[in-house]
Image (tube, rainbow, N blue to C red):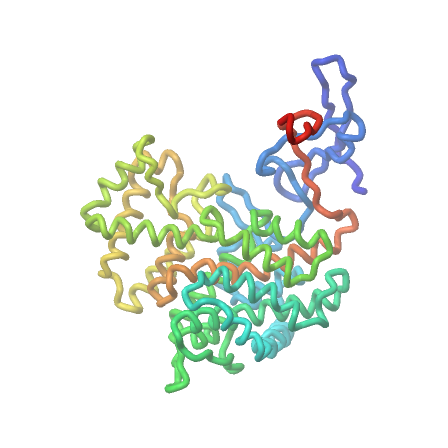
Amino acid sequence: MKIADYKATLSFSNGQPGIEMPVYKGSIGPDVIDIRKLYGQTGMFTYDPGFLSTASCQSAITYIDGDKGELLYRGHPIEQLATQCDFLETCHLLLYGELPNAQKKTEFTSLVTNHTMVHEQMQFFLRGFRRDAHPMAVLTGLIGGLSAFYHDSTDINNAAHREIAAIRLIAKLPTLVAMAFKYSIGQPFMYPKNDLNYAGNFLRMMFGNPCEEYKVNPVLERALDRIFILHADHEQNASTSTVRLCGSSGTNPFAAIAAGVACLWGPAHGGANEACLNMLEDIQKMGGVAKVGEFMSQVKDKNSNVKLMGFGHRVYKNYDPRAKLMQETCNEVLLELGLENDPLFKLAKALEKIALEDDYFVSRKLYPNVDFYSGIVQRAIGIPVNLFTGIFALARTVGWIAQLNEMIGDPEYKIGRPRQLFTGAERREVLALNKR
């Protein structure tokens, strides 16, 4: 049990005696009031819908300062990681706490590379889905099903099991996502190739075919690698909290990650970039760039119910630090592919310009967020809109695993059990059927 840095006193206006509660300071960020003994001492719960003012755990992995627009992985700024490291170095950092040196990077990369293939029977499991199934439905099933194929790494309380499950998940997610895509379009699966890097291998499995050699475009490879880094972890968001809550029951790592994938599927979470591209396509059908002003007027009208997707963020009250990095990548990809004049991308640029200059959006800090740019990049690369959230899940898997491992290693961790403010009927008797 931590020693309190200082104490807070809770007083009541109904004459009930006040109580003291310990307060802890983190290394950075807000202090937290320890309310664990509140119910035992007062018979009361706290009320915090959505847990927006509740620290559910202590963590040393990722820190966000929404007011400053700052994101740190293990203390390292996202801007430096995205420009100086690759995704597997970032994975090593999140899992083990430090960036690897040259030798450890080689060893870790080799370990992941040697686990990229999936059990051959997984393809028969995949073939049980309809070809028009949403990729996130398919991925939820495939990832949960991994526990049926890899029995030797399903004990979440065994550190060695968690270690190999972590490597397997990081290694196999690109293969599974690519398989889900190939299945949906009726093309043969492409096996991983060990002489390619993580992002390049994924591009080949997605867009290559057995008839010809696939040449990886280094600009697209770097773009995808950056998308993976920027989405690798994001503190205690909905899907990460889901993974922790699921894992707290002692379930296997594959099931816990599958639960995270299911939560990420929601349009308010991982589906935001999919919703953003759908919005752009809707504006395009209305008349494209010529209709942007009209659309933005509808966004400002409180009675219109028209929402601007891909702008603003739940946590960042300033510019999303990932958005600037993704904006650079977006411009590089569009230039490389000669898509600067593509109607949909011109429309996106027109939206971006208004949001960055119009007082209505600037005063409300509704800046373009990472979803806005990553959706544009993925569409340019050729990734279908309904697979955007699958790419997000692929990238976020390492963060989920790091958070899960941290929770299991925390001596204070218990199975999650939120409480409630009950507003239903009080005790009442069941009447006989003929008297109801």
